[in-house]
Image (tube, rainbow, N blue to C red; front, side):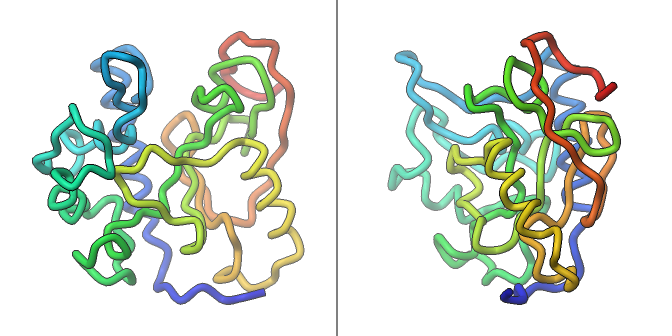
Length: 199
């Protein structure tokens, strides 16, 4: 197994994102979702919505997709909370990637908010993970990770003794807490009602 080249896990960064998500949900009555155009096409990641609750708002044209040339400069202004400090700062696109990925159901709904498999840690649905560098995405890109993919990566990590080589390194839970791998996890099927906690 390859050891990822990165420094200490930025627990404070993913914790800040979890807090921002809770502040957003309190203000809007729902978890942040990707930005869509009038025809329902996905333009930008939910992470863009978090800027006003984190480090300030880069000038992103929310009427254009994440990969539009007009949004390249804004993508270079990756908020500190999403940045891996080991990536080359400001180098587009490599230095503008984040390892913070939302965990979604197969229907594209936040983990625990819809029918299907739900990933639990400590009896609570997982909302985000800090994944190894190979899984990093451009922070404005509407690309995250499914419950099934997180489950697959966690299974791969079960026999990994080197913490720096784990594919899933941190997770935020629905209550805003952050856990560091290895952690006890389980996947259960939900009938579609919102899941508060695992029984």
